[in-house]
Length: 603
Image 1 (cartoon, rainbow, N blue to C red):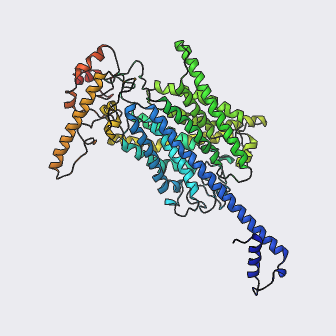
Image 2: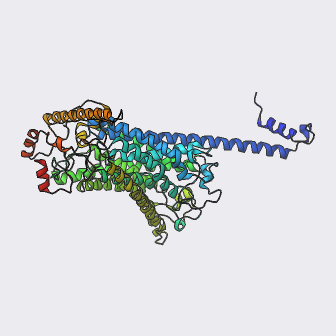
């Protein structure tokens, strides 16, 4: 039977007396009250710690559940013969991020600063933080007591890595996904986190000596997570190149109108959007970290409201603006579901950075602008022939930038004081209301954005270029046509109701036969090499196979000359005569060849 607090204190005081047999009547009331008060304080602290731990674990679960949303959107946006491959690559993103962030990522992001204390005290700058570029302790979580915080930060890291997956869909090799996930989670993303979120970071608003007395305000990761992931996606897809047949025809000539590759399931895309919206409440509200500290419960409620309003405003703006543009150019009134869904996600991304420091009306403005920016950027990427299969670049990169800038415009003095305990530098519009033109916070936001862009470009551009140069990045052109599910997972070809690359059934059957013949030829060659090399074999789909290896401006491996001669031109001629560009670019001659050279090679 457990004893009461009074009985426990009485026993402790008795045991601490000189002779150990002093009666309870000799114990002063003051000592007894002090013991009871200390016991209640300890119990209260343990209760708060338990509540905070449960809160952060629940928020981490919501954020990680967003992986399901990303997977559903990617699966819905790709064609039916790439669904299995896309889902597996989304899984590899989370797996690679977990391994990279556990081994060194967390240490680079938060390591070496009072790791045994709670995160609330971490943000209170206990221990005297000094500005550093990167963390230097707690590798493999050694010396870390509060593992729940690692789980929460890992979920954010996995989100940043998964942003890239949809952009590269239908044309990227399996190896590349796991490689870039580990690279991003282990080194690139942690440096951004350390600089902006760690009290030791030079951009952190929690630094004892923040940049220009303000530091960058990025409450839930508008730049840390979304700009990092979106910028990486832009670099990757630029080096990787567009999907075969998206902007170029069979001979590599530019199409008059880019071909739309319609995803096989709008239902999955819509489901994924709602899952992401649901998970975003953990993403934004969970970033408060401690629910029991001061009046944080009020801040959490305000964050949830701002998240909802910005998402709704982005959805409405994108939907109706696309309708107005459609009426202007076609004269028909159409409501595009995909634009509405991506507008919703754009609003969620844009409010992420400032969800805790802006008023509700400002969140609506931020959402409206984000919907318009998404639509404009999506159209611009098509004009620039940058192929983003899920529009992740305009959603995450551009609106990550806009969301961070909006903090420098709309951050209110009251909310800044409540969340960051200072209102010396607030949003520029509120500074004008104070009778000054103080744009310090806005300037810090600009510096932070430029730092994230510069760091990601310097790290990920050489990484993707090296993978492209070594042949580990781009899938084979013929493999793109038949579908990566067949190549990597042994699936069967399934015809989409809208066709595959716009080709007719005869073309698809011919491509499948060519793929099977090539695979059989590569397999026979591999067996011969195995016999000649005493049992050492090369996989049939290896990049070192002559029949699969070549060079092009986007790393698209070309079919060997002996295979070019075997192409059935009878199925190609009618397509060229009818000015149809529905056949994917199987043979990529590269941009370095002149028109005469391409004609000579084709004949």
